[in-house]
Image 1 (cartoon, rainbow, N blue to C red):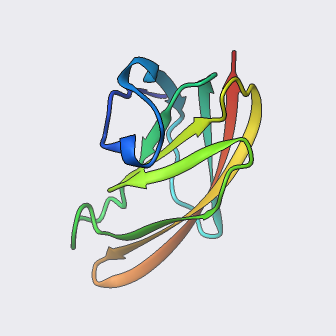
Image 2 (cartoon, rainbow, N blue to C red):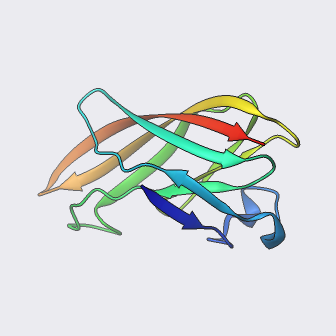
Length: 125
């Protein structure tokens, strides 16, 4: 599992928060699949959590990523992106589960590809 310490990444303009609120989160490793790739995220109440999307194909731009979009917003928090990072912050004092969807387009050996990510979030106390 990857453990991330989040103190920034320029997310301030996308997610309302301070460095004091930043903390560790857990996002197990995942691989892109045809169809939809499931990403699981575990974070704490009132904490920002994020993960990095890497196409493993550094042929154009940053790691071959052409575009990343959040296509379905979470119901109990805010999701945003900065460069190749996707971040989530739960609504104040929310504890439970949430979900959102992301589409990433990337260039692999000159061929444009699209991956769909479904992010399941668990917010613990």
